[in-house]
Amino acid sequence: MKIVVGEGSCGIAAGAAKVYSAIERLIGSTASTLTVTGCIGMCFLEPIVDIYDGGELKKRLVKVQPEDAEKIIAYVNGDENAINDIEISDDDKLFLEKQTRIALRHCGIINPEVIDEYTAKDGYKALEKVLKTMTPEEVIEEIKVSGLAGRGGAGFPTWFKWNAARQSQGETKYLICNADEGDPGAFMDRAVIESDPHNLIEGMLIGAYAIGAKEAVVYVRAEYPLAIERLKEAIKQAEEKGFLGENIMGTGFSCKMRIKAGAGAFVCGEETALIESLQGERGMPRLKPPFPAQSGYWYKPSNINNVETFANVSWIILNGGEAFAAMGTEGSKGTKVFALTGKIKKGGLVEIPMGKTLRDVIFDIGGGIKNGKEFKAVQMGGPSGGCIPADLLDTVIDYKALGATGAIMGSGGMVVMDETTCMVSMAQFFLDFTAKESCGKCIHCRIGTKRMLEILNRIVKGEGRDGDIELLEELCYSIKDGALCGLGQTAPNPVLTTIKYFRNEYEAHIKDKKCPAKSCPDLLAYTIDADKCRGCTLCAKKCPANAILGEVKLAHKIDQDKCIKCGSCVSVCRFGAVKVD
Image (cartoon, rainbow, N blue to C red; front, side, top):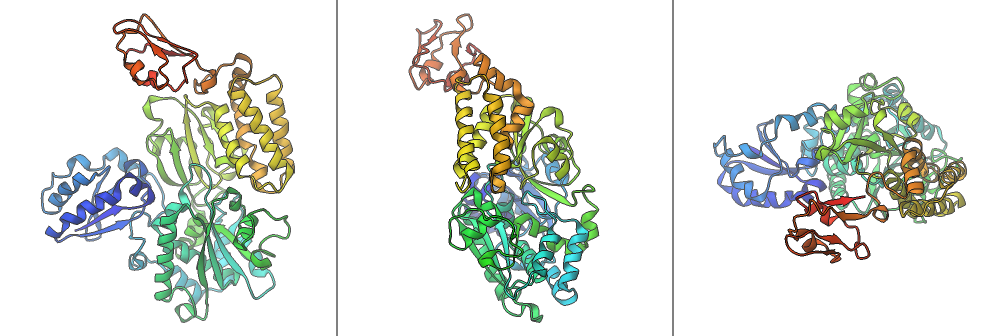
């Protein structure tokens, strides 16, 4: 048997490395082998251990702890019941069974550090097909038939970008992968690189052949050390096997690949800012036109796509563009990967065909809202996206339908919020992020986002004024019209959508000095109901500000001057005596 420990970043953070070490100490007494894989996407169940017999998955174990190693060894030695308490439930199995996996098809299945496991899954067969039987124009046509659009957020037709770079004059051309995944709550690209780096390499090589590039660069944020480490090893292995470098597969096509670790600037997710950073300059967007296809990296024709886009390419080549186009909607083909996070029962990576609804993802796959709370909204597209409310849960997931709500598909972040989330505070959070990440090149973004943030800061503190909502809207549209790049043009989206769908919350903050979600500390007052208080003193003991006074078995009181509104008294009171107004 083969024991496989999931060691993506999420698994390691949950303790997978310790689980691996515990199994390793005991496995010598068996005929089994021990290996690792990347993230399968069920982050809510990490650490995960899979047991294979031959090529068949026999058992999937979840939330495994180091002390469970003895149970696992007992199972492989013949005790069928040893692991009953850590086996995945039938309900949790549905999380994967309800998905359609293309970009993630190998994630959590193969060892990302062993190239032979990738080739055993038909890895590099698409590259061989392309180099030996297809012209660059035929490759581009196949991508056109597939309807593959850029998965980085803009949804621009991939074939069009490739074709533009192909037709640009010049011997020197570059292919660039944008792995600068900066959206809060997004981790799709990281998971693909950590779990299936050869799929990225193969997709990029096919793209390089199509446009005529002999050099490829992966621009990945330095905060992804495991992804960088595994990608470096994959590049080395691909070179050793003859899939990368000079005269690939004896076809005469040559392409080298390198990694650039970015410093984590959100603006470098914009393609021209990324190019500036690659050239050793400060990451600031260029004016367009010219577009990168005409004048990109070192002012040579360049093509830029994100990780998920390239992760679909080899599947399309092997299975045909029509097979990919058969999934999805008329205007949005294929599948899309989402990072499902927030107040959700089953958080992780979800890949579904375009055309599913938000309800399908959040409730059918994600299991709904945790702790019995009510669903309130979902933030789509990160800081560049918008909040979609509960009454639009049946919105179809495609570029047009999501755009009509005021949100965007984005790279695939999906942050779920419940009734305890303040939408004004949420808008403030995202705007604080974009204001800090603005490169400062254009006045509208540099100054406008700061003025908006100042207004939001006042509102959540209870210092909002009449006319603030209208002023926010005016600033939003001015920034959208005047900003130079996509970061500035989309920065107002969280504010505009929260005003559109949750205007009553803004008005409550401004006029009533109340937070309907009871989330903004400056607008809350903690009091103790004397009739319910039993004088157990637990709240007083847990109060970090010593703001709760009272004798044992007598009703307590909160000193409002000392209270820091941390909420610890609410969390420990067993009698429901602490009220929040």
